[in-house]
Length: 290
DNA sequence: TAACCGTGGTG
DNA sequence: TCACCAAGGTT
Image 1 (cartoon, rainbow, N blue to C red):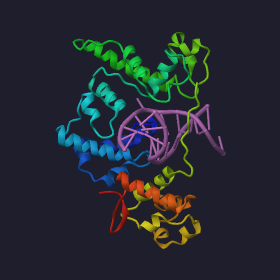
Image 2: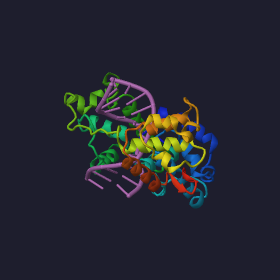
Image 3: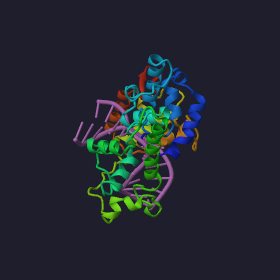
Image 4: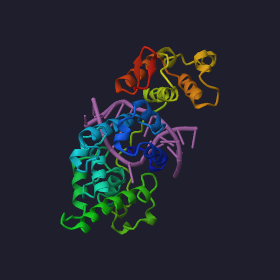
């Protein structure tokens, strides 16, 4: 849930989630449709599919216990370099090299004297993080904890003080050692490329997913691909009857149909949802996968 | 390697 | 208002 999503937005969803599905086996036993609905508006719904898939692998191949080594974690669906290292370190106390967006930024400034890390994580950054990590003696539990605390500390420094937008250098405990400060806070050496949203397939996908989440069952394909005509939406019996105005169900329909997207783009968005397994076609229409 | 994949808070 | 950005992963 925390992949590319701020902690404050994850927290309430996570609380509800863990209350409903305390163990991997609980989640694995659930149909995908329920998992995707519980994911709500966290974004990147493929993560919900992969978390569910990971729960199944854990149940079937790890006796229902989350594995504790980086290699085993890395083999799970949706678990990449960062997540495997973070779980091994924070949940199991393994002194791994954790590199997330916060740590990358802190290293870029404090050590490399740059405003931002490189656009893509590279081997040099990983080597730097490994070099900076306090050496741990496996025989010494205190030193293992030191690596854990180091990773937490650098990550929090980046999240709370050495932030991306406007860093709070006046509150920085290591400002005296900062290469970026010493260099006079130079500007970024590149312009970050933004992610377009309005008018993109992603926007259409998101609106379709909202409709599917709110629908108790499959919806008709032609309704999902309907023309971008608000007046037509209001008079469309299936849609108008689905919910009253103000209800999330109805609003999700209105939002989807109000998008200025061409029929071809709507087709493309739906096809990609089907290809990703986020939607499923049946005789009854298009719905969330079982 | 680079493009793709959501959503909402914020300066 | 609007572009930026967030505990990345996959193809």
